[in-house]
Image 1 (cartoon, rainbow, N blue to C red):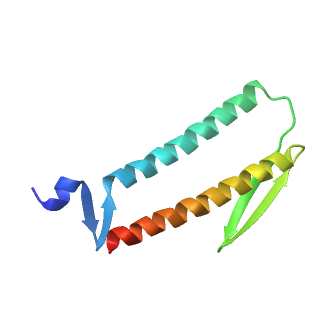
Image 2: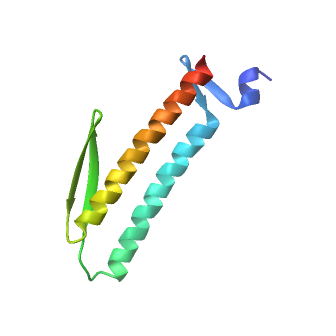
Image 3: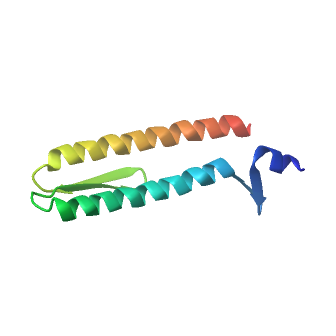
Length: 102
């Protein structure tokens, strides 16, 4: 048994891919699809009411926040908080990866 098999990693063309990270990616996609299905079912059974929506688009380091509907202020605030958290998580993970690679 090689060292790569013991730690659960595979090497493809010089890139090390952890099996745990790949599993986390798959779980993320499954959760997105389950969330979409739940929203669709809720829209079919509880169709009445108003609709609000918001989004954050990153172009480089600059976030663009858009929204529409009666509850747009709350949704845009939530989108901004998620955008800031994603940048913080990225910076922390980047710092940890630099320490790990040295």
